[in-house]
Length: 214
Image (cartoon, rainbow, N blue to C red; front, top):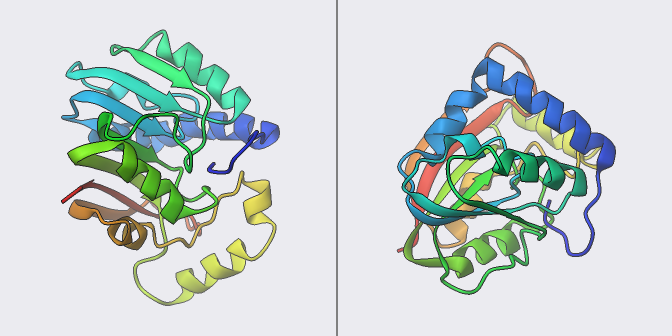
């Protein structure tokens, strides 16, 4: 949720926290594990939400800085941090103005957040700024349908309605993988899939992958 100033979506935040638990039961739990597997050193998670990823970080992570602007979700993240196996610092901040110095983290994680930031280029520019040279970006996002056709048209229609306002700024049809490449990252691995399986939804196309700074 990347905009400057206070970010409040109280109704959506509570719904999102409940839906996250349901999605984990349908398979997102494994996606989260894959997302952070093998990370080490100091990591920033941008838009950490209620902290659903915290339990999956490996012990090789020496510090996790979890940035979350929405007050209710941040309070849930603070609670989740007390149960994490790695040190977690939960901070208030937005994606386009991360509260971290330049080149201060070894890796960055974005998880179901680039759909809702105000400016993807600005948010990814901030990720690039805080990453050390050779740093790694891990991403797990719902994205624009890969092939032009009915789903792409549905996504455009949905994004032009009240959906973003009702869903915490979420846009279903963003080509996030292209935005990551445009920000100067080299995509090293990419898995595209529909999730949840068997449920037709404009938010079903997902991408999970790894990108590095050249």
